[in-house]
Image 1: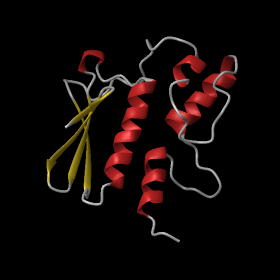
Image 2: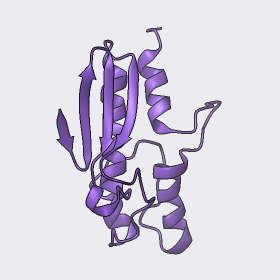
Image 3: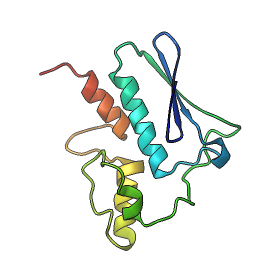
Image 4: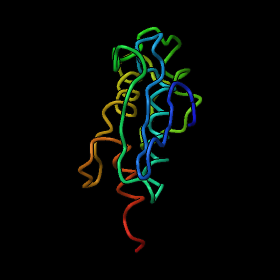
Length: 133
């Protein structure tokens, strides 16, 4: 079992990875670090050829209360410690532009250039599962 920034990664049975939101004291509210750790956990499971099933679970009485509105700091400060998953930019822009850049990166993950997936996790999984050209 691995514990990283509010995410537990477990292998409870052969071929099964369980990713657990582990912020029960915050009702598993999703802050920036938790979302990037969640993405990393999905990447870890997707890259493991022995994993056939991924279970997303949560510690405590609530699966997730949604976005953590108490994260604090500016958008640029929230995003600074992380390498973007997508090609989004503008996190330091004032007002709605900076907020929309963060939303696109973390929550929307809008498809680009013919992609059909709506999430960075499934885009990365598809890339890791594709045979080499």
